[in-house]
Amino acid sequence: MIQNRTIPFLSHVNTGFGGGLFCNGTIHWLGAYNNTSFYFNVEDEELRDLPMPPIPDDWEDLRRVLYFGESRNHLHLIEIYRPPTSRFSVYEVESDYSGWFVKYNINLDPLIVAYPGMVRTYWDPSDLNYYAFSIFYIVREANDEESYMVLHIPEKAIRYSLKDGSFKKICDLDANEAEYRSSPALILLAYCCVGEFIQTLSPVS
Image 1 (tube, rainbow, N blue to C red):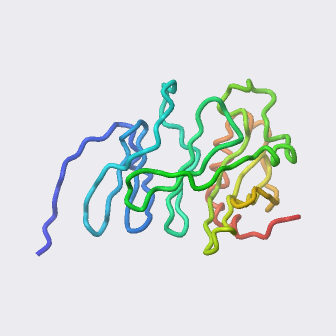
Image 2: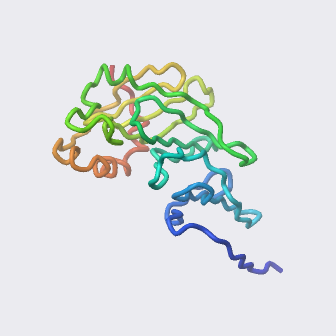
């Protein structure tokens, strides 16, 4: 006979239990601070701590997650703190959940040269939103050399190769520049529901 078990645990009030991510038979929740993230193995019905990359010592705000997603049973995480940067790392969780390692290093400088609108020159360079880009998906292919990232930059969706940093436009996105300036997050939310379809489109040369 299977009996229901209730095991109490402590978590920070800002742990995001409303947005769990399922991967490899496990549900993952990110906390707002260090050591407040969890994963739940559905088969074993066990809740455990999910170690997280350290937050910079001089950062006094909540954890700043740019991307948290899954592809081909790989769990990925991107965090960017001050100073704002166009160069960052994509982390992947260890198979035993002992921590995270750097899977890809990203350099968006060539993309910015091609699309200078990615830099919000009307904002202070020290502002965290100085660079105008969001990440729809990281897509792992069977051949990892073909893996890529789908980015949203102002009014465009971009396919970025995780192997060599090359990129192509997937499609144009209609966006109101005034709205993007006031709240870039609203523009991302407007397209997140169609993001999985955007990544299947053929890039435009």
